Length: 180
Image 1 (cartoon, rainbow, N blue to C red):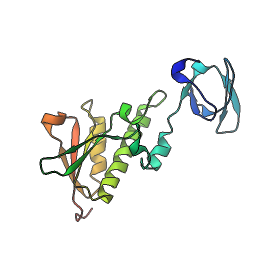
Image 2: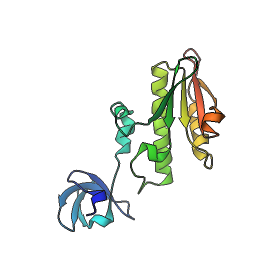
Image 3: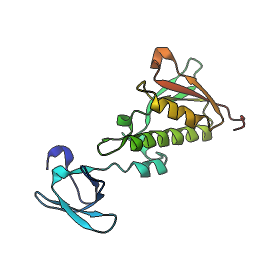
Image 4: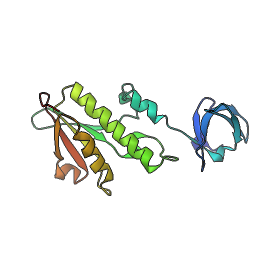
């Protein structure tokens, strides 16, 4: 095994170029045994496996515990001229997970939108006035999807500060008394 991907018993892994994934139950010098969700055991060499980030559980927990560690989705926090806290959420995939290996574009977008939804709902519950989603420029797919998601909430949005973010961020204004 290479030092970059030290596998441990109990970790979830995926099989490269297959849809198979499972939990490591045995480690040997050149073979790793995994138990799949269907209960079957399979042996693979370490180079055929990749660690799986359990992002679905992170989303379900709405990042309650993760906000304090390196997997935090809150990239930057700033203070405006009026001394109000503005939370910035960086939705770039490399800011949300350690590796995107084995994830389809759909999986990545689903994760990004789930994080955006969780952070927006959290901001509404905390009665924050504003939140900025950093989605990047790219082809505009994430930007469009984030904006479609935002439309479902009692908020208004516009492009964030061009001088600070370019065209790669959306600023959301949360109005607590606005009807959905």
